[in-house]
Image (cartoon, rainbow, N blue to C red; front, top):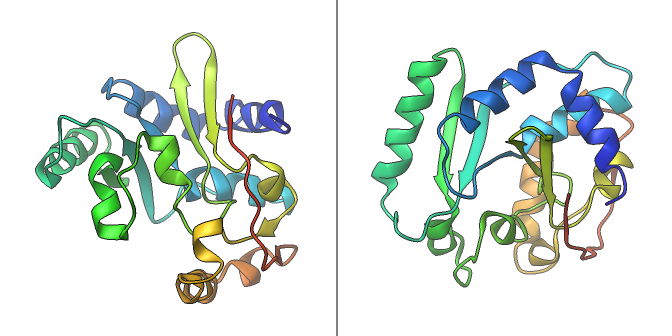
Length: 193
């Protein structure tokens, strides 16, 4: 996957993100990743010549376990993570049940669930792989992320386009990262590195 080496190097040069990846990895959850702004913001900071900002807002931990469909399991994991680091606002979601909230067909894995997220640059996740450093899941690849493109995923081009537009306004990304470009058309690509 193009840019996978760049992203791994960026993460390995960021002690705080590596520490957070290690905390989540220590729980040994099935098909577990840290996604969204944790990755996206670090890359956009880099592209704008800024020092990587510490993860702000919530840290999105996604996992996939068909045997755990209760939101209570997510809360228990959040509490476990809070006991490891209470300074982080953890957001844990088992992607096995998220299709119901989103009105989609059941997801088959955490990576599959990311195909239904609003933006291609947000649909990127990382996890700590034993002895191999960070592993990357990016259902739409990393080209948009590294090209500073904010593009809707195929699910958000038409029927859910208003949600994409609302996120773009509310997140204030274009003010924080002025080199970003918004592209209206979707494309599809599947990648895991």
